[in-house]
Picture 1: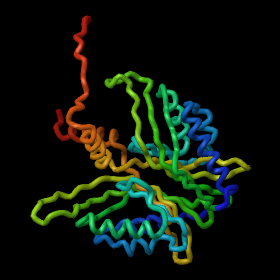
Picture 2: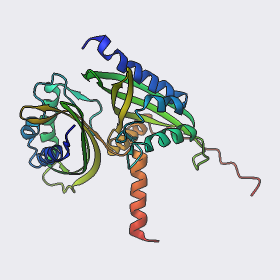
Picture 3: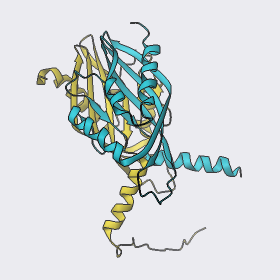
Picture 4: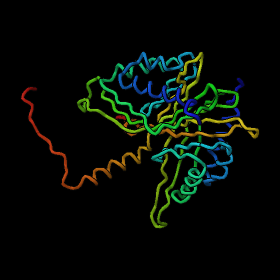
Length: 155
Length: 168
């Protein structure tokens, strides 16, 4: 199998970059449009989002909930697992400002998620058909917060 | 998708869950593709994934380090992506009571995560080579907990029995 890392890492960076300006059309263009059962599992969703109608509805709703969104990815790994299939993992940090009344000051919030993505080779290149965002769990995040406090207080 | 195409995948998920339930690390390792040096295991509470041979040690330590584990997959979404590649996605309700003594008196902890599990067929045997857990965003989990307390009502402050220790 060939080394798919450079191509897929570039694709992931492009995909994650489309968060800026909430360019969900751009994101959609990097999914396999022919897949009948694409699955997107965002960290804030209670259930997986399966199928194009559900994914399109989710992206439309995101524009309403967030005022701004930016994302970056790092630590990309990718490998081919069949002639037309690849699996990729990467870390993604998102920074968002939630929508709300104009007279209320809102600070951006951010978090890191670990992504598992499955891609299919198409004539136009690799395309996503399964993407799951996994934050560290509540206990783990509490531990990270306490570690950060300890570092900052330097007791 | 025909049932006979995804049947073996469901069988692996069931066997995987049973092995966790009974803390049978040997069974978990038997279901894992130990020959894959890039295999990947990421649990919801770990910062770093376990990769390749490190997965086996992690599975063994997890089973040894717990007094009880609950592992119940639900809402399975199974796909045969290629003749020898399978995908399982499911909701996982889990619980665990650690073996080591800790400050909270070893109470059972639990939660729900979403799992992506990849399997490959080699020499007529399906084995797992990628496993990743994804919890709900912690901010929302915490909000849900606050909402649950609110739903419980003002009157239901947990009662405590303050018993002085008789020995130092």
